[in-house]
Image (cartoon, rainbow, N blue to C red; front, side, top):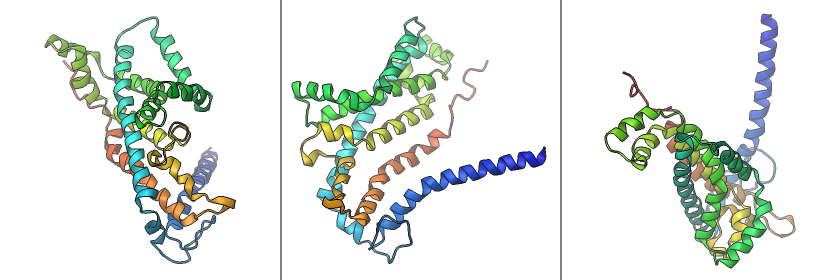
Length: 275
């Protein structure tokens, strides 16, 4: 029996190691190629060390403006998504209705729709209402596309906050909105962190939506401008592409580091409902 357990554990460890290597190889290529003066598609030790790839891309047209556009798009859309998801999840979590489950299933179905299937009518609608080629229109669509799943996540986290805490606040004269802002949301910090990180990451790496809705090159985010490193006739500046990928990944990594403590902290309920 002990030998069988050992063999199963060894097999599981081998499988996990294979998966880890599969994820680590692309990351290793990005890091190594960014400082390699002769980078190519192979994962190899750099022929030499150079920062020339970073010097070549650290210009307003290549990096600074696209990154600023990405931060404006994804940051604004993430904030809008979190606020709307909290307001939508609160009544779904706190009030019982026969329509709650059908409504949740409906928005879950909306979340499963492929983005390519709805882009043609969305493009036509944006042209009609003069939102095409505007950052605010793209922000609205980003938020709308992420909202269904964000509502599901937010509602599940909100269910873990005891209702007794809100009832105590209502006794003191607090309104439903005040109890949501001052009691529920602070206690579900990990939930807010998960929704924020998930929404931001999904928007940050989205190529298709801004490529379709934005037409002016100066408004293109980094997820679209990275395509410029793929030249004609299959020519690719691999070193510059890797350097841009490192910088492009930095905001997401920093966001995760900032909220990592909240992700692992659990709900701060303490002994609030004892007695």
